[in-house]
Image (cartoon, rainbow, N blue to C red; front, side, top):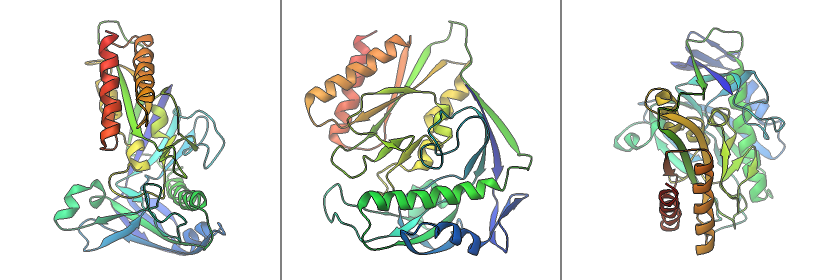
Length: 338
């Protein structure tokens, strides 16, 4: 599976009477994009703002972050299962706008008021000492400001915010379709000689079983009591893995993180040089019972062995004690298989 990722860097964003991309500058028509967002009757009001690096501003009520991308060839679409049908993505060509994000700021009346199931949101400072703790203080952030109608359920709130965010990102990336990119990278797991160590990446993520949304979704389907499963890393670049837009606080992963997954990027760059990158195992963690932890650990280790891996790399997306137990038991199970 071969994916060409074409990059269009963004140096400035300006409001205009049209939406277009030219020489690193995005012009956005506020009326057009707000009208696009308001097509969803679950949104009572909407506006659009832009925050620049170094600007003395704080973005509040952040629900998610996404990078504008669009498929120009190959099966499916970016954000499959949400913006289009469920078709396997990760091949063909995808255009991306780098250096810019869509960062929805949304307010709604929650129905769950406390506990881990309750909604929350994040903040980003574009200047000052706190700006150093987030990559989004160095990106230009296009912020749709949303107010949802009263009476939406928690799942409806998530779907509404996510759809507005993804539609806006798609429209922005659409401006690059007929333009020559500055750079094109090719991502492909080509067969290699059996002299390099074969490595599997275990992307461990926190997923709740008791919340309206499980925190992480694959092709739009919430991942709950799921066993680990194998995916091609290119699927991440096309937005196959997304997050719960009700939870925007800093200790949860954003969709942007999965689309720009740093370990996947590094493993691709080492593929054929220092190692043979076999692919990604998505592992749902934080099983409540000991048996669940043992089963998911055994499942991952057996999957890696059947793939012929000589070694694994494992990361976890959220710092929690139970999540850490799952990761360590997975490493122990992998070591026993060697």
